[in-house]
Structures are given as C-alpha cells and as structure tokens.
Image (cartoon, rainbow, N blue to C red; front, side, top):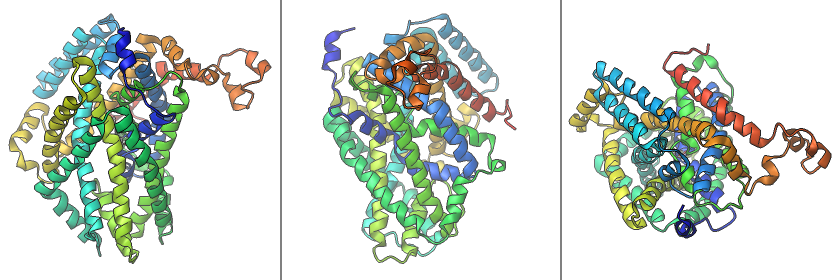
Length: 532
Ligand code: TRP
C-alpha cells in the first residue's frame, strides 16, 4: 500500500461529519417520494412490515460491512475489493461459469441484451476476480443517478411553481393534469433535471469537507425541521386516522411476491446500500470513530424519516378522498392539493416548504452517488476531481434526459424502445421504470449479496471485526446480555463466556442469515418459492 496516498486522502472534519453525510445520503427521495407510493401500491401495512424486516436482517448488517470495507482500505469500491481480494479464486471462477451458462441460456431465448450483460459479468469474474463486485458498484450509480435526477428536477420545478403561487388546486383531477403537463413537457422537465444535476455537481466539485460535509451540515437539520412542521400539520387534518391505519395495520392478502422483492429492493435503495456509496463515504472516515453506532444511527434515522413521511402523506391522501395507488406522481399531486384544500391563506408557503424539503433530501443523496464514480476516477485513473465531476455528470445527465422524456412519451425514442425489446424481449414500462426497477430490484440486492458473501467468506469476518474494533472496542466485544442488562462495565458479568457479543452476532448474520434472506426474497419473487 502506498503510504503517502493514504495520508493525502481527505477526511471528514467534524465528529459527526460522517454520520451527517451518510444520513444525508440515506434520507432522500426514497423516503419521501418513493416509500409512500410503493407502500400505497403494494397494500400498505403488510408491505411496511416486510420492509422493516428487510431493514433489520439485511440492511443493518450490510451497512456495517460497507463502512468497514471503506474505512479499512481508504479507497473507492473497485480499488477496495482489488486490495482485499485475491484476484481470481475457484469461487469467482464458479461465479463466472454460472453467468456464462446463464448467458448461453438467454441466447436460447433470444434475449440478446441479457445474454451480453451476463457474458460481461462472467468475463469480469474470470479476469478481475472478486473485484467484479466493485466494478458493479461503480456502474450502478450511473443508472440510479440518471433517473434520480429526473425526480430531483421535478422537485426543483415544483418548488419554484409553489413559490410563485402556481400550485393552487381545487380538485385531484386538476392536480393530476398540472403534473402531467409539467413533467410531460420535455423542455421544462429536462431543464429542471439539468439544474438539479448542476447543483449536485457543484457540491461534489468542492470535495469532502468543503463540499459534501458542509452541505450536509446545513441541509440535514433544515430537513428535519421542515419535516416535523409538516407532519404536525398533516396529522391534524380531519380523516387522518384512516391514513394512519392504512400504513400501520398489516393485511397480508394484499401482499404480492413482487411486493416482497420491491420491499427488499427498497431497503437497499433507502439505506444507500449495494453500490458502495457507504464504502466510499467510509473511506473518508477516521479510525477513532465507532462503526457500529454510526451504522445504527443511520438505519434508525432513515427508517424514522420514512415512517414520518408516510404519516405525513397518507392521512392527507385519505382525507382528500384519493386512492393510495397513484404511482410516482403521488406526492406531486397530493401535497399541493392538501394545502390548498385546508383553505389556508398561507398555502403557498407550506407547499414550497414541502418541495424545498424534497430538493434538500434529493441533493444530499445524489451527491453520494456522484461521489462513488468520482472517487473511482480519482483513485484509479488519477483524474482530478473537477474533470471527474464534469465527465460523470455529462453522461448521467444525458441518460437522465432520455429517462425524463420517456416518462410520458416512450415513443419519443422508438429506436431505444426497439433496442430494449430486441435485447430483453420486452420492457416493463418506459426507460424511467426500467432504470428504476432494474437498479433497485436487481443490481442493489445482488451488489449487497456480493458484499455480504465477500466479507463473510472471502475477506473474512475476522479481519472485518479487527477493523470495527478500532474506535468501537467498548461495544463490539461486550457480552450482549451484559450490555442489555446495563452491566457493560461489571467485571464479573464480563468474565462469563463471551459468546454472544455484537461482533459475533453480526458475523453470524453476515455469513448466514443476511445472504440467505436475500436469496429467499429473490426466489420468492421469481416464483420458485412460495411463502404462503
Ligand atoms: N438512499 C437515497 C434515497 O433514499 C438514494 C441513494 C443515495 C442511493 N445513494 C444511494 C440508493 C446509493 C442506492 C445506492 O433517496
């Protein structure tokens, strides 16, 4: 390892710099825009329960893996895997062979695109060994950032519209039409998407301390404040109980196999897991910080905010007499309507406040996706930060513009549609939907599975725990029961067999429970396994 390079790497400045930045990454459109509408479309309470389960048994262990890999190597995901992994092992050869077979299988079904993708993965596994997981990590953010920027653009646009008093709706139909007209007009949508991308780029341009950390420090507290004000407003609406009930009482007959996969994918998406965003953020972390408490805080805050956002939005949905299954336009229609219907003279302030909150949440998340690619280009190809930002943004903005136009008009790109049909044998929805479901439902869980298996079986939990100990000694080896009983510092209870500690508990999850849970959710969703 090149010592100088490590010393040069920029680190988070303040004590809570990392936690704020990582929470900023986790809390995003996923919590406020996506969670409510997918919960609405998948039956509410039962979906929320599965989602919470995924967070606890899959999200939490993996978040600790990612931070640990990052802090240990002080590198971007690809270089991190390169450093930790033997180049090719029988394991990677087996994975390569598996993907080669899958590729041949796809050829038989004439799905040439999938065949090509599987072939690439297979080659990557043969040649780069375990680092192919890191390669996947650097590829995924392009896809997510592209369509994330589209929604980010919508929020910027709606914020301005709100400020100018343009969101005064009388009926749900009117709200729907205005949203269609806004997001469906290519020029407006693409311009706002570009504005959002430029804001994102501007923050990453300034690096870790003066860019990402500073922005998170200012924006995150503002976000909390805005959100709390809004929930209080929403919960006092007449008819709010029905919305609360929809979100909190599970009805399992409403849950579909696809719903389970969506819940799994969303657990990854919401916690920013599965593509190395937290490996990257962890690589700027000092060894004096506690990885466990950082991981717990991020998971706790992220989940809390999703639930609060649900509580702010569903009561309004029901109070306004809308169905919960509106889809991606849900919050863009419901929130403005709610505030005007309350007959408030200051409605425009509430509305613009809500969309400002969304812009903030989206920005602090988008920067973490961009940073993954930028860190890769800087570490691996010695680019300077500014060039890396400009080039990455240009590519993502271009793909994003196509996503944006495709949302209401897939047929604007007949050639692209034809490519998709040729390559994958059909499309589910437009480019925006394809990017969304392909990344959250497949790329992220597979990336997460790779990361868990890698830490559990290849790198080894032993070395991971060694890294976690630095800055977390007082927690990780404490007898779990002593910790719960408040006897953490009691020598006698400490001297009893140290079997169940946070460290051993985490190791068992990462080696067995987490990977098996991901595989079960996958098999269930493709119908090979039925959970009743
Ligand atoms: N977690 C963010 C949200 O909920 C989105 C996000 C940011 C993300 N960085 C990520 C998702 C990395 C997956 C991977 O909106």
